[in-house]
Length: 472
Image (cartoon, rainbow, N blue to C red; front, side, top):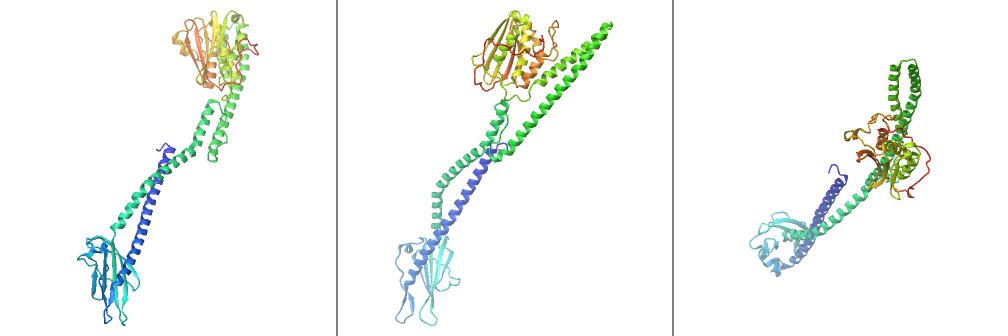
């Protein structure tokens, strides 16, 4: 529960609902009991006034107690309904008391007033008692008539229990309704959190560039902070790309000067020193070219789209004009509605140019390019029919400066640059032997479909590939 905000809110809400309804049930039971007691007291007061009618006067005008009125409630022993009347020394009791006498050792209430008491009954039960006092006679010192009417409190308790038994199903139904409403409230209230999560996922998939401000007011501080963080990240990446590019360009002139010094040394016969300098220059050039290529990889490519089939078509048209490319058969297999890759078109041109030149360099007769869409990915496969590479060397093909074929002019950074481009676009580069030949697969994240289908076939090239010489 500590990790789930929804569960925490639901548990707290359920506890609050149960506690509130429980308190309401106790309060209603107390109010009902007080109401029933008031009704019972009113009934007992009315019965007490009725009992006042048993006082009669004899021939001498002396008040005395006459026969009580007949009432089955008061004739049945221990029925739970009792009365007791005292006039001077005379005491009359209901038959239901049997041989029990209600205590009268307390002061009588003021004449004309009632007192509500709780006394023990003949069976030890608690009785609700109403006691009244009346003055009887015309003498200077009239007699005090004390009337006690009692009822068993068990009847009040039973009435309260019956009330609770009838009330509990309704409270349970109300609790269910309130908990359902609480669940809906939590679900609707936390919906913006899911919306933010969807937008963060859209950021990673390139469907959005920022979180945005069309959110509830409570979520705006979070969205502002995230968008500010993204702005700062893009600005820092842009500065880093510019610094890397400036640094790489700054090295080109000194390296060219060193290369001139190496040629001068070679002309003077100091070939060993010249070879050593040229080897160092070649190594540094590889590093410079690599950093220049990395600097060209754009920082914000989430919203970029590229058509692999169209770009491959343009590159093949360029390569067909080369002496080596004109002797090869080029096959492009792609859907009529070409899948779009989430990558900058220049970066994809850079990567495919290096891969196609690498395949052209080692192919015997055929180069096959296949573009397929798989779920949320676009797979570009480039296969040649050349000699391939040893299986143990497949995992090292994208390493910096690796050249399995030392007879070529490559510097061993082409596949490393393609690997960097793929990694920056959330993709990957993989290799496998095709027997014969080598297949290189460039897997990229898919972008939303373009409005128009990609053009396949012969397309007039607009520019040559920027890729370096082949690596193998």
